[in-house]
Amino acid sequence: MPQPACTRFLRWALPRLGKRWTGFRPVQQQVCRCLVDRLTTLDLRSFDAYRDYLREHPDEWETVDACSRITISRFYRGAPVFDRLRADELPRLMARAHGTLRCWSAGAASGEEAYTLVLLWHQAVQPGDGTQRLRILATDAQTHMLGRAATAVYEGGSLKELPAPLVRLAFDRAAGPDGLCYSLKPRFRAPVQLALHDVRTPPPTQPFHLICCRYVLMYFDAEVRRHCLAHLTDRLLPGGVLVLGTRDLEPPPDLPLLPINRALRLYRRE
Ligand SMILES: C[S@@+](CC[C@H](N)C(=O)[O-])C[C@H]1O[C@@H](n2cnc3c(N)ncnc32)[C@H](O)[C@@H]1O
View (tube, rainbow, N blue to C red):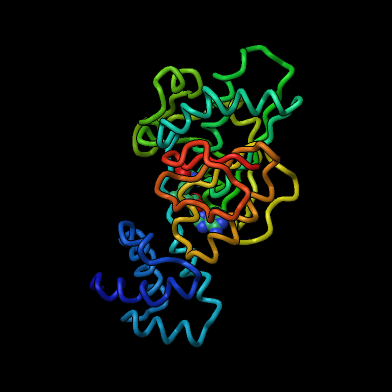
């Protein structure tokens, strides 16, 4: 099926899901592959036929929504922000946490971001210091991503930004179907709790010291983004830190967030 037909379809369909076409332009091939598979399953010959199908079967919009979730992730993705968290923000937050530091990775993919926080924690806290605890809630809208996060086995490409000493510390090498794999040691998985959650729905009730929501909201339109950011900000403790992706748009100025570093998309709750 020709790509221009899929592009036309996406420009029509994405705004109906509260998503912005421009966010998808560089990754449209991934979305189109998923949609073309779906058309094949439904035995439809064109995207025009698929539009008619959507009009007759409104539940099908859930499939379009699912196909337009981009799942690229890596450990230590965008190193400068993690360096900054390890050096400054985690120690500061820990000093205020009175025992347990609570973090939320929203749109956690296969757990790479949440497990990176665990590794930072092990670097930033004195080894053997039993007085501080770390709890991370890692949520995603896709069960199969959470399944991968639970398995915590990764291909080498997922670790390419992670400093080599951390790879050696935290992973066991294992043979996978496509070559060498890296299995995260159980003690580094332990602080992470996985749960299904859509960022567009009400957030978990507990407050957090640190929330990461990176490369998730950039795909939504301004209204949905604002709604989600208001929820995330609301769940941050005063002085807590919000981390967006460097390609995410900046939060609206009326939310109670002060930039720590705009370029890194790092904000502190007032
Ligand atoms: C591009 S990945 C980013 C993963 C990770 N935050 C990172 O920066 O490496 C986006 C993730 O957000 C998830 N996602 C997309 N829409 C979502 C939604 N409405 N609610 C929760 N997660 C969502 C996708 O399933 C995917 O795993």
